[in-house]
Length: 396
Image (spheres, rainbow, N blue to C red):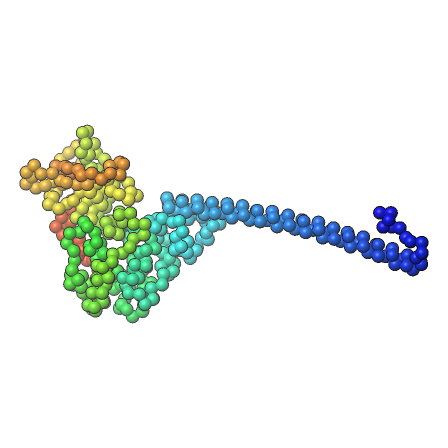
């Protein structure tokens, strides 16, 4: 330091003053440089801390989103509520519809169940969800293929009604003038889905012809007929290529449990060594009686084909009983499929199936539904129900 402060003897007073000024300026510059270095180090540290904090926040957010998706797949309403409470989703129909439409990590069955609920807010979400689909210049089968790929159609008839009404409104909005009304589009959409079921479900033995499909749909265009060429093209499209079902595991509700004739809880007498009554969820459709342990099960515990069976009331300790049996039985047994606890499907042989209903009225209704199912054509019956619904809506 002494060398730096040394002033040569041969300098004039002015030169000495200039030297002193230079040294002072140098010191100020060094101090400024150090201060800048300290500030840079501080900012760098803050940036690094900020980066790690943001990273931690993103990691935490991703974990919560993943947890919300899992909750949604188990219980759609609880999953949505969890995401909203953690500020991962806005509590608006548009935001939730976007979330469902993206479908990242979401179970398609859960999406269908949520969209089909009858709550006012769920219906708003359904319409916002349908609005995200673009059906312009698509024929009806093409539009249905796109729509039914974004979720799995639920099994409850009322849910399906709401979803197909929303679909028909959106399709007619995108394609004005194709149909006289949204009711026409609604009925024809149902007919196409039922056609898909009838043509490609192995449980349906009587496959409808194109002539039968055309005949079924006469008069649905506000009293007029749709062009035969249009109906033939729709028929051929479905016949040549069935609807692709997301996450298809062979137990698709569209194919098997679409719009059942009847469903509800009944007691069934078990056929084991010790006969016990077990509560089961029964679904009557496609000339078969399916029963499940829980309503949420994807696979039935058993399938009872109704072909060649008869039904009768019986007396039992349990009230409101009836039996399914083979008439004029000559050592014949009812061959049915049963799913074991480990998932294996085995053939079960029974001389009869005894069932108990909760009330006398329900017993009567079940017996009448099963009698009708044994002898009728489900393809015509389901479409007749859709037409009846539309006519009722117009009257009111």
